[in-house]
Structures are given as structure tokens and as C-alpha cells.
Length: 360
Image (cartoon, rainbow, N blue to C red; front, side):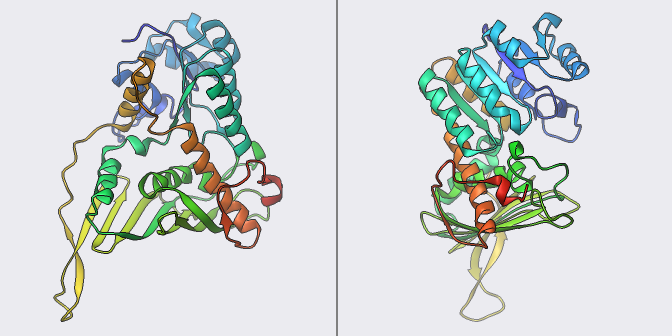
């Protein structure tokens, strides 16, 4: 185990509590991932005193290392690494305070912040102070998604032409406020947008729309978009939608077949001579290549450990990736606000007015 200070700020679901979910593959939280990678969390902060005490008991951290004010923790402990697992609207403030107090590496929950200027400020301060940042888009560390990226690069299904990407879930719940940054497209859809960039490269144009089912103002219940990659791939995206289930899926169509990957499954279809039509090919399911399983949270914290040890490694999911995911999402919102106008990327950091877009 490490001999340096590592602080967890936010002891809720993704910070710690989801380890209690009997159905999830473990580890499935920041606490679990850090522990599996040999990194010991030495101090923690949460506004909920009961939750904080529960975490202290589980982690073996003494009461003197448990805080309800992150500023007090950062000032007194000066942690080398800070894990930010709080609500979106607090990410930027905590990150900037951690950088100011000398933290060398930050792990920030997705989305990295609620606005492009706030992420730009984090990037500027981090660069100035030599702080490295990982944003928890955990599928980048998942062995199944890395296998699919390898298959794309090796042209297993030929040249990629079209992608259908879905993050289907319930409608937006709660009160919309600017500091939160958006609805389902942002808060779960950020994973979908990020893995699109991970697979297919930069997005150059965005056209989109969002809808509300029961309200006339506030964040979206559903969003859809047409994205164009710099290599010309057409990507059709849907997020939210008032579904009574959760579905995360990419259907990747190439010239020689397709790959289907989602939560808990991956399938491969390749072209073969048609049994229905003379002179045509169909696609038929075939065996998916073997995958050596690696837990995404463990891999994330192995990456963080290498950075802490001064190893020459790049961030697999860095703050610039967090910025570009938010840029694409806010471009969808902006396009909808302009009646479906095609938006060219990059955006100017201060050009998105969420108050006007969501009639707040």
C-alpha cells in the first residue's frame, strides 16, 4: 500500500456505496478500485455525517481523518491525490481548491464540470501547477471496449460507415439549475459521447434536438443527434427517452459486418454468402474474439498509481477528453435551440448560454 495522502471527497454511490450492490462486478466504486490497485485512501470528506462515519468504519480511517468540509481537508492534509466523487456542480470548485493546495493528481467524476469555461479553468490551473487529471469515463479502461477498439483498428468489420449509439433511460427528474449543466444526455450520455470519441476520433459537426415530455422549461427528457467524425463516419445518437429500463449500446456498422456492444454483452456479425438471395451477402453472427477480463475501476487506479510513481504514462481519460465530451453535448443543446442548425466544432468556451437554451 502507498505511503502518501490520498483523499476521497464524496462517499456516496460512486464513491463507496455501490460496493454493496450484490449484482455488480466488483470493484465498482472509487474506493473499491483504489483498494484493488493497492492505493489506500487515507482521508475522506462528505456532507452527510452518517454516510461519512459508515465509510470510516468500512475503510478503517480514523475519525480525525474524516471531514465534512473539503476545504478543511485539503488545507490540513495537502493530499497528493484527490478523488472527486461529488455532484457535478461542485467538481470545478473542489478541483481548483485541490490544485491550489498542491495536489499532484485528481480523479474527477464525469462530467468534469457543468460548463466549458469551468473546465478550461481547471485545465489552465492544472497545467500551471503540474497537476495531472483523470476523468472517470470508465469504459475507456474496460477490457471489452478496448477489444472493440482493437477490432475497429484491425478492420475486422471493414471500414466503419455508420454508428447507432443509444443511452436509453428514464426522463429527467429534479429541478433544473444551470450549475448542473444538463439532463440525461449530459449525466449518463457523457459516457456514450466519450466512448464515441474513443472509438472513432474527433467530431467535427453536430446537429441535434432535445424534447421535454411534461414541462415547457428545464432540462431535456430526451435528446437525439447526428454527429460527423473527422473521418466521415455518420453517428446517430439517442439519450434519455422516458424508458422504463436502462440501455447503453453501440451498433457499429462496417463494410464487412457489424459489432454490437452494450452493458454486459458484445456480439460480432460478419458477411457471408446469402442463403436467401443469389448473388448477395448477408451478415451472420459469429464468435466474438476472446477477451482477457480486466476491471475498469482497478485499471483506472493502476493508471493513477503509475502517475503517482512518476512513470512516463499518459492519461487514458484526461481532462481534455472531459472537455470535448461536454463540448459535443452542449453543441447538441445549442443546435436544438437554433432549430436543428448544424454546429461546427470546436465551440468558443463561453458561447453556450444554458439559461437561454433551457428557458430558465
